[in-house]
Image (cartoon, rainbow, N blue to C red; front, side, top):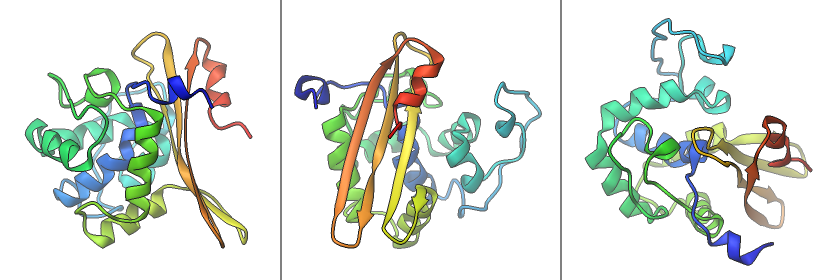
Length: 197
């Protein structure tokens, strides 16, 4: 739908947690999904952020500070290398490693998100198999006897108009369906439209 917009690049926001999780694991910024980083006591508007975090808690809670701590351990140079390896969008970071996916130079289109997700599903990138397994478990939004839905939301809250993302894939017994949706959000309640079915 909307072929022109599907090729337009936007900040990935928290959809970048998909590659960022693999990068953090591969670079040993965290050992596994239970390796915890201590909360520094800063009170955020989101109560779920106000505690110690690990991948298991931070990924679904969209906890920005946890991933920012990981980026400090990894460094901008490593990210530039990974973005090139992953062929991720425009492969740019910017001046601030702690927020390049939120308000930096990184941009990706819906079409590029789909290609990236296909490679994640097929495990084509040079990450350890165990790390793919961790990521894929973290991405599960819904699972039953008919399908498994793996996905991630994202919101570019620091730019205007705000862009809302929903990307992922659905596995059935017979096939896999990849999707990437982005919408303009001028009101907070518009975030519900990203993944409304």
